[in-house]
Length: 157
Image (cartoon, rainbow, N blue to C red):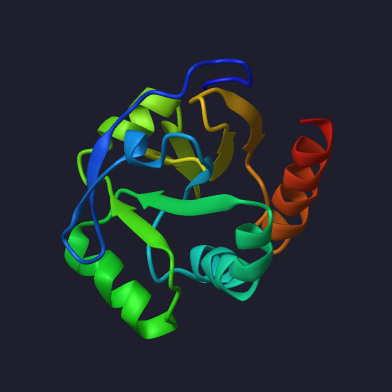
């Protein structure tokens, strides 16, 4: 997994509306890039609803939130329409971006191993440096942890 201090790899993916989005589109802005395992699952819904419910706090911190999952565009569109998130979700169906950030990992459940996305969040500065990494952050605590870090980052700048 990429660490704080690393340069954030640029990428291009489709959002929930089929629009092409590139990380470099957000040059000069703080980006909260979070990886989640699967749309419309309980933990991922809790995490995304938390972002939705705190979006004004992210905006006040000057941060653009982007969620990335290995789902296809159709799935993330349904997810967004069902819950009304109002922020960018990206489809990483071939998990190339998850690979770049080190979040595509071997997982196990009930004695079976498989490859999947490890839930993780990266705060990326306007000059494309990763300033904070939160591996395995809990969905219910995600916003508290990330928003606290954004306040700390903004007060040290």
